Image 1 (cartoon, rainbow, N blue to C red):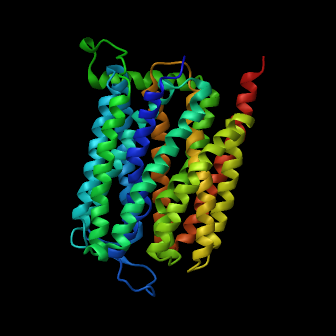
Image 2: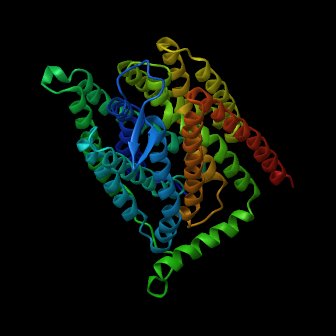
Image 3: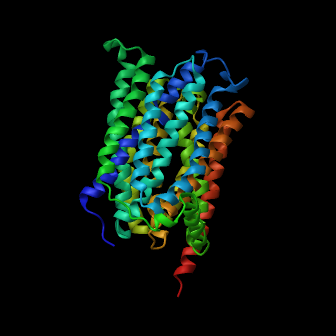
Length: 436
């Protein structure tokens, strides 16, 4: 196949520009800090802050982890069915548009979240999270449709780089609203709420521009003779049988399951770890996350170049080994260690985008030639979401049981170690498959 036109490639990358503001503002910076502020007691000497919800007392940071885990359970349950339907009906662009709308509305709804309506705020967070991650399975599935195998590392990295650039632009504006809002007559809390609204507007607006440039997919079955649900499950069953005959792809998915459990949990929990465990001020936290985003831009490009020279699996082995080292550094950072936190942010940023970009393109290369691209990527997506569910529940549970998020970081390190071992086995299977 040939790589699609520049207009289509740029349109696909533009969706990363659109939705990555959710990942930065809602997942990584302003929302976690805002949540911790309105659910905490404001006393740094308190070991843990607790909140009551549905008649039970929770550690506030653990409740946040559990809410995200619920969102990922929902995504893991619905994405296989919807992605199979998208392939069979040829309507993945419509699904992408729908979840873009759901996610942007969830972000906008957070404008009304304050200390008086915790259940409402967590519900809006769950809706936004479902919209973001559900849209990604349809977005990712376009990669093998629009890029030839030899171009997929480069195109995948371009999407992540566009996402980092776009999210940093809006983040800086939101940063001004939160930290310099007084100059415009805006309180800190209101500045955060306005930031959530802006994320929803940015995501929806640029998302529409991106989606309109993507090609329509063609249905794979006769719509008139196939039930929506049974057609979807039949597609899933067909892909599952194909996966069983692809040992390299199966082993890669298993390794991805473990190391991505660590990557995504670090990304989702880093801000609350810095705020609650390390006592890093909100301003410094936001600066650190901005550093991560900026460093991730050249990081994704460099790692894509390395993979071209030594191969994707070798590149992933090196990157996962580096993540193990980073987890150990994160565990050692002392309280109020702002400079150490900045150094860690630089190192994390360099490998964060690269490992996600190379993982996505590696999977697309290992896939067989098929038109069921969305169904295949649903397995990738479900693997990722189940990993996040386990990672977030583990992080929150260990925190509640031990009273320290540092112990949770050690659990994440073990996930990376298992993933690295499985990558070695994947590479061995790949070598065996290449033998005549």
